[in-house]
Length: 137
Image (cartoon, rainbow, N blue to C red; front, side, top):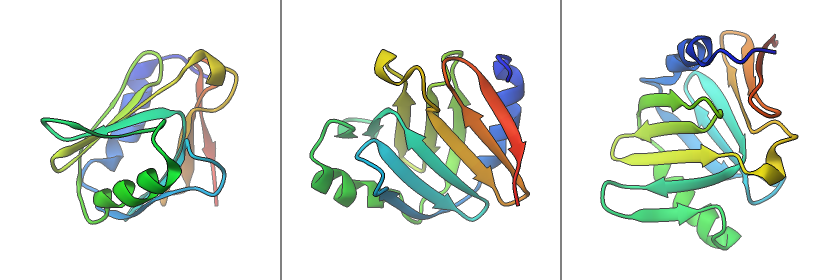
């Protein structure tokens, strides 16, 4: 486990430039989003907001039917920026849209999100402010 956000930013920065193939609500629950890009699979288990430059479009507290419909607007968009806060809040910019995940105290004891890269490693955020990398595949 690590708490150095600089190393984490370097690892997940590889997402920039990837195009979303499919963004969907997972059958694991409403806070679980699955976002598949050409080079990675992103799983979230946190509260989230999706916004454009003027409005909030979607929040994790919206009805699941609305989330399932609106999250697909990420399909075909390129990841233009990736940020992670000291608290492991993940922000992904997608050509005009921004998805921000944030951890609440209710989720502090679980993994908040993960990114499985096609190159064979997975980054896990959480529990708490810890993160880890595991070799996969």
